[in-house]
Image (cartoon, rainbow, N blue to C red; front, side):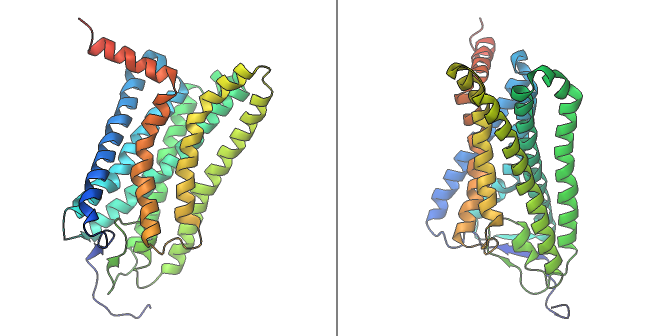
Length: 312
C-alpha cells in the first residue's frame, strides 16, 4: 500500500444519495423541515434560558449550551446534505471535507461531555441536595462546559489532522453523504491501521466512558428515588430526570449502534439511515423533550409571549 502510485486526490465524491432516485426530492423537503424545526426549537431554548430569570439554575445553563451544540452539530452536515440532494455534482474538496469532519467530531464529542455534565448535575441535585450549591457553583458549571468544548477541540483537531496528513491516491469515492471519520480514513493509501485504532479508542472514550458515568449517576439517583417515602415525591424526582434520560438513550443508543457494532464502517443503507437519524432527527427531538413535560419551560414560554406579543 505504501508504494502505491495513483493520482493524488484533490477532492472526494459523496455517493450517499446516488441510489435514492425519485425519493431525493421528498428527502430534501423532509430534511429541510426537520432542520428548520431544530433551529427554531433549540434557538427558543437558548432565548428562554437567557431572558427568563426562573431558568437560571445550572440545569438550564447546561441545557442552553447543549441546545447551542445541537444547532452547530446539525449545521455541520445538513446544509451540505440539502445541497447534494438538489445537485447532480456531489464532489467535495479536501479542505471542505477536513472542515466538516473536524466540526462533526468536535460538536459530537462536546455533546457527549455535556450530557455527562447534565447527568452529574441531576445526581448532585437529587442525591446531595444539601451540598448542591457548593458542588454546582457558577465556576464549576462554567468549567464543565469549557472542558466539554475543549475535549471536542483537542480530539477533533488531532484526529482530523492525522487523517488528512495520510496520503490519498487513486480512490476518492465515499459511499456516504458526509465526511465521517471511517469512510475518509479507509480511502487513504497508507497508515489506515493506526488511524482505525485511534478511532476505536476515541469512540470508546467518548461513547462508552460518558455513558458509563451517566449510568452510574442514574443508578445512584434511582436508589435515592426508591428511598423517597411518598409516590408523589418519587414522581416529582423522576420527572426532573426523565427528559435528560430520554435524550441520553436516544443519542448514545444511535451512536453506539452506528460506531461500535461489528459492521460499523461498511456504510451501506443501514449506516446512512442511522447517520440521518442521529445527525438530523435526534437534534430536533431536544426542544420537544425539554418543553412538553417541563412546567418551568412552558411557563417561561407563556411569560415571554405575554411580555413581547400580548403586552399593550
